[in-house]
Image 1 (cartoon, rainbow, N blue to C red):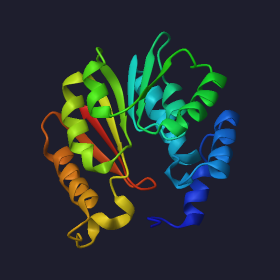
Image 2 (cartoon, one colour):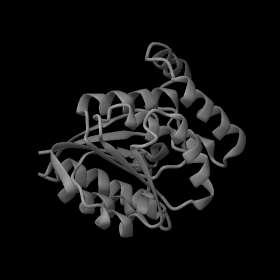
Image 3 (cartoon, rainbow, N blue to C red):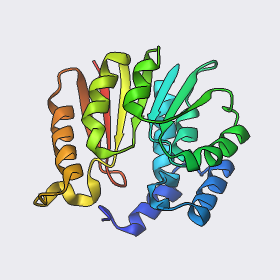
Image 4 (cartoon, helix red, strand yellow):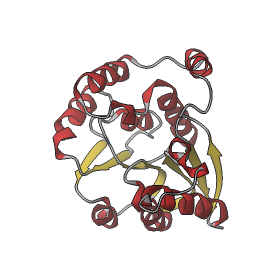
Amino acid sequence: MHFISEELEDYAAIHSENEPELLAALNRETHQKILQPRMLSGHFQGRVLSMISKLVNPKNILEIGTYTGYATLCLAEGLQSGGTLDTLDNNEELYDFQRKYFDKSEWKDSIRQHLGNALEIIPGLDKKFDLVFIDADKENYINYFEMIVPMMNKGGVILSDNVLWSGKILEPVKPNDKSTKILLEYNRLLKDDPRVETVLLPIRDGLTVSRVV
């Protein structure tokens, strides 16, 4: 579902910062070789993620759901010197693809890949986070959020992707559609939880920005 016309989306992208060359190459190769390339953040959302990261200027970033690493590199643009970015994914087949592009970037020594179940990996990350990006299996969004909030520094930002879910959040929920049901609960949680203040942005498939208070 396009929430605004493709022409307006293109205009917004054209009048935003250019896509860096390395990310443009990653974008092309993802579309050429990887299944479900629409999962890629892409130029416009990538520049939004980069801008938020630069404004937060995080020491430690956590990303849940790496895919091919496009958003990872966008988020890394705001890292403090000596900072770390832990990115988690359970798709072993994409590991080397991700690493190839990470190693071509200036953040190759800062990005740490973790392969496996995020709910098992996160408790072992002994650090406080300033910025978190949740873009993985929707059925665990609430579980991720509850696990992450105590690990956030005050004023830290949690970004949640796909919260509009192609408009399904406005439609009657089908009995077997667990993802939409969870996202509806998750969006209410972010609105009502006193630990965060939240704004939902209708960017691409919906991006929520939640600041830990």
